[in-house]
Length: 256
Length: 70
Picture 1 (cartoon, rainbow over the protein chains, first blue to last red):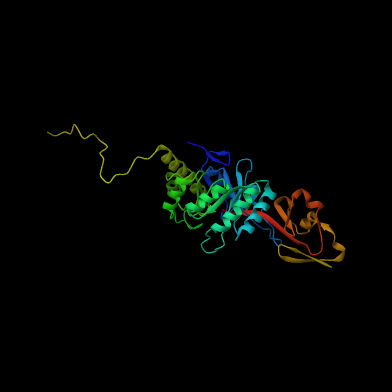
Picture 2: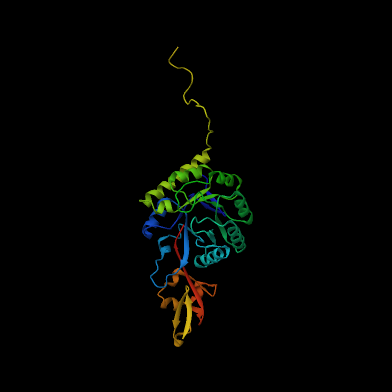
């Protein structure tokens, strides 16, 4: 299968995984391994100065996985830029998953602030992976300012609803010249396979894996689904018809 | 007496305790400096500069770390 290329860097896996909501760091690192993913997202928050802080990065092999800090919690462009710069200072990584979600209920991304932040970050040397609503015009505008990918949502973050934005994502895929990563709302392996069959270049999954009864098995199931879906896309699906088309010969029947 | 703000929380220090540097502040707070990134007054402080960055009365310090997220 083709390799995924983002900002000139090649990846074998087309499944990115988030690290949130796992019941332990050990389970998180086992599930990441089972997913076959090469890109894992992390968030930034204040240190709790009253209590001991857990170092989750110790559970992620930085030689094996590209750490992709996100700007979750940012409500506007300024906060997202600040978080991105802090992440870069902490890790030396200039890749950032740009999220600007002022609405706490649906966590829908703010298109205006996301575009504004993307422009600032790209000028500052960042590789920007923006989380967006499935808006083809916005996707094009982001691509034009130089984002490395576009990441349209399938449905609200953590909702496990599957692909509710299918026709808009199809347009984004049709028009994009950067990789399209379907992010948020993929609740089942079949949802990930569907996105890949549609021609998405990759998917990002967190909640569906982390909160499954068996996260490692679910991570593996998503890995297989992403591979299957991509294979189906690259193989070139045959068309759909209303009538039956016999698979067996219509000649030589045992009758006169 | 002096006051600094750490992650939005006011911390009081006796007059004799100033000056101290960022590394010393992290030690006092029992925070592992290898896992944090810091801002003072909105400016990011590189980790290699922690021990030469002096904290002064009235400073606002932000200490940030990575946490799990999607």
